[in-house]
Length: 611
Ligand SMILES: Nc1ncnc2c1ncn2[C@@H]1O[C@H](COP(=O)(O)OP(=O)(O)OP(=O)(O)O)[C@@H](O)[C@H]1O
Image 1 (cartoon, protein in one colour):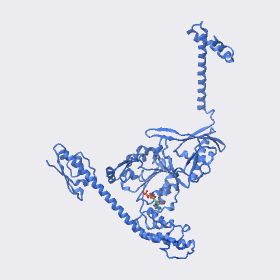
Image 2 (tube, helix red, strand yellow; image 1 turned 135 degrees about the vertical axis):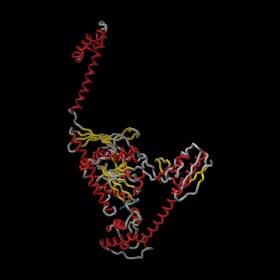
Image 3 (spheres, helix red, strand yellow; image 1 turned 90 degrees about the vertical axis):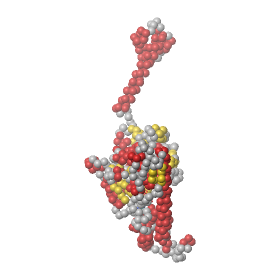
Image 4 (cartoon, helix red, strand yellow; image 1 turned 45 degrees about the vertical axis):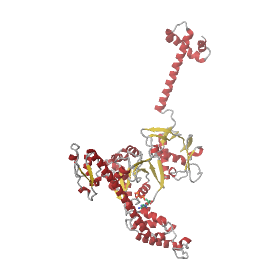
């Protein structure tokens, strides 16, 4: 009775709405199920029912409003975009925020001294605490700022673990940009503004991105590591005449002809292979071209233990349009037969994966995986593919076919002309002092006669240096040393061009001697490996024959493996007779022991039956 009174008496709500409804409920819906004499209980249940209906109506109303809001854009006054770390757009926006000094009210900063993380060399963050670190605001608390009259807000995720199939988890960072406008063009304009700023600021540098397995995860965020390398002027690289110009022209033409490729139905991509001895300028060429064309480099090492076929596919498809995809030392994925044998014999597992004894990593990428990745969707968007190798002969013809590799450019050891150009570049007249200009220093007293310092004009110094360069070049043998080696030598005499010239002949002799020793050591190593392999094969064969009741006679190695015949006999029914063949390979196969085709020297094993 008390409850009924409290519901029906007193409040405006009960009088105006609840009362009539509860009566209806009382008499039409609920009453038939209860005893009419028990009026107190009935009204309690009726009020509950009414509350239920009211709640339902409110929820339906809320959902309806939400539906209207989402569908008809009535109440929306802002647009929000999110940026994932690892995506190039994330970098554009962080640089934009830094440039707009949005960090001013930030209270949290990330400090880094790692050069790889300090990207543009601009004054990022607050006034620098020290020149040796970068302070970058974390934007963990939302920050409001104005851009071209629009209010915007920035917020960064504190981070969270995102899980990616097969690849474990990574710490995922996002930036949310909310702009208080209903026009998507405003948002696009802001992002374009950020991109332009990024391009302008990074112009003196080439941005090189590398894939990072540690944080690979959802979406396309594979290229998490990036570093900025100072652009290298084209004229600081000395190649055979016209080589640099022709690559550059070809790449420029390619970048300008997207429409032509589309009309012709040809996949819009271009591949270059730079091959030749180490230290001849292959990588330097690529960096210089990237700087000249304003392209970013996405560099992947096939030797990395986390790079397998699916990673390769994923990372190529994550490269944006008009960028350079670079694979250095592409041959490492396809070792020569000799290397394969070595890997087989000596491979060991380190904490960084499988390596040969000499420390050469063994790639997990297969040829078909690489071909698929290069042919796949990801490779079809104006990407320029560059690969370098020291051993073109190890590459499969399938990889070298046009469409995958459109141009092959050979690099050579330095010529005299290159040596001369390098010398001149090394000693610019404006920054070089000739020893004749110096008063003899104590260290020079032994080798140089004491002379009073002389004053010479810049042009005189210039012509003296040109003469020195010619003299230097005349002492360097053609195609014997790489440009990197010559550079290393000149670095030893950075401020003393005359010394560089006078010591060149001696240096050549020393280098030749060291090179000879290196070659001899390498040959010895190969010989030891070969002997060990032959020994192993002999033991394997002996073991097999012992099992089937034969004997093995090991004949001395012969010069021409192919001329050696192997006689295999064994118990009837073991298949030996039918498998007897002139090559040890087949003989081995007949015994159920596979011998690699390269082991023809193992054909020196002559096997005869005791039966
Ligand atoms: N042709 C060249 N002109 C100017 N500098 C060169 C040239 N070749 C090599 N160098 C110098 O030698 C060093 C190594 O060069 P780079 O890495 O480009 O050679 P590479 O052919 O790519 O070697 P590797 O095959 O071992 O990767 C760089 O510092 C570069 O400045």
